[in-house]
Length: 191
Image 1 (cartoon, rainbow, N blue to C red):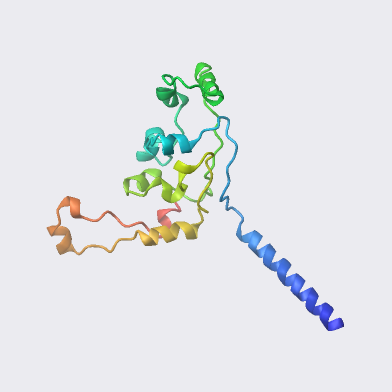
Image 2 (image 1 turned 120 degrees about the vertical axis):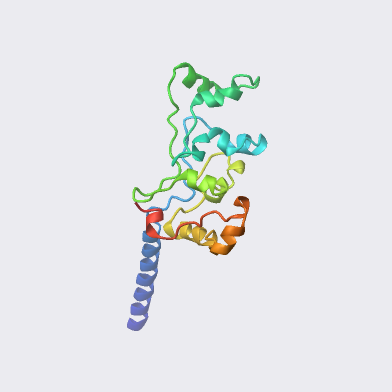
């Protein structure tokens, strides 16, 4: 009987320890985080049904470290002429009339010691959905990927290109040359 109690206690401790270790391994991972926003913005309608390209609204992603959230005036490019008005569009108009920015809640957070440059990824041809998931199907935007170092490195490894030889480089036209490989050294993301 005493042996059974000891075994039961050890099993209980093992399960509790395993659960605790799993919880500790999730610190800093905000996958599936989908905060309520001041205006319910349905990406499913805009990027999905209406097929508005990500870079129409997030135009800064081409040239900046940050994708940026567009000012409400960009939204009004379309919404000022649409006949169908909703409560959410009325909220948007109110922000524009009051010349106040919408206080959007940030969804994708990286640690301060990580440098992520949207323009490098956009110009390298990485689809927005690779990191942000199927935004065109989301009613409320959520953090799709874990955004951990291991997750990022997996993608960098998949996109590392075999360097071309000098002879191949010299004979290839500019359009045939390979784009630079995704960096795997620490300084690519930590500086």
